[in-house]
Image 1 (cartoon, rainbow, N blue to C red):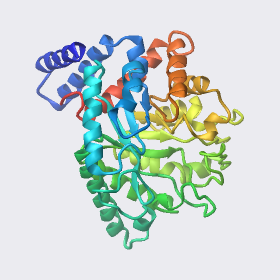
Image 2: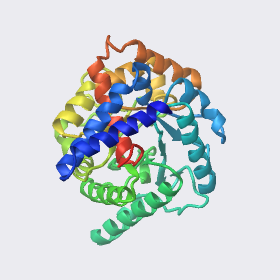
Image 3: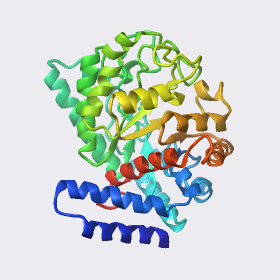
Length: 377
């Protein structure tokens, strides 16, 4: 806790030294995060790269992921079923983090609407996103998408949640695809782009970070990445016209985070059976360098989805994801698997994972936390 107070004091000092213009304020944030970064041990930095789940409704289930693994954030699963219990739990989790001397936790949850909404009691329950895409004319659909984002944002913020693991930006142009299905806004790339960006604007207006998923696009696949490794065999021209269109729009709309897909795209990465989430060509080459995204890059869950667990040893998968350019790994499932991943990444700092690669991701995590109001203004 003393270390956290020192971080805050350093940030205040920097704010006094650099102020006045919007450019100055942005510079202050960067310098404050660098002060914080320099004060973290390597183990603490590695912990910031993990968004971990835990079992049970009580905070005791999170002891290990916070005290031992120094998690940067928590992904709420079935830990809370009502808005009141979620608020009680998130408050207790932040208290546990403070008492453990760790940075405030970035708390995330699946809250798309439709079937994918962890907390329904005490919140507004909308139908699936696809029904918004059926509204005509498009300006009415756009207004409804933004309204839904605004309501979700207000309700999540009141629960102490900082990040919604949505919206789905996949274009559902394959009717046989059931894992995405009506979670998508539309079978039209331009409609999905417009409505996804509208939803992002509403959600983030309430201080809740949006996560566009599943990059570079899961809507045309036949298989479910929870069960196996899907392959999208479209050529690059088609991917540009369809799959990438909503993500380009989201980036232009200042989406806070993008989640990578456990899906293989041979036209983007020729490495056999390598999912996008582990691909330097897709994460760094396409998302960062070509599309210019500078926010937080999240993996889809690394702990329970067969596209990863059925093909890779858990520690090796974690290392490859960080090597690819991912900033934060979502890992649910048994604590043993979470521990193996954290330890594997830690063991490769200065080896396969350079200190610069580590620090770059930690900066993205700190920037997201600051944007969510966790590290001060």
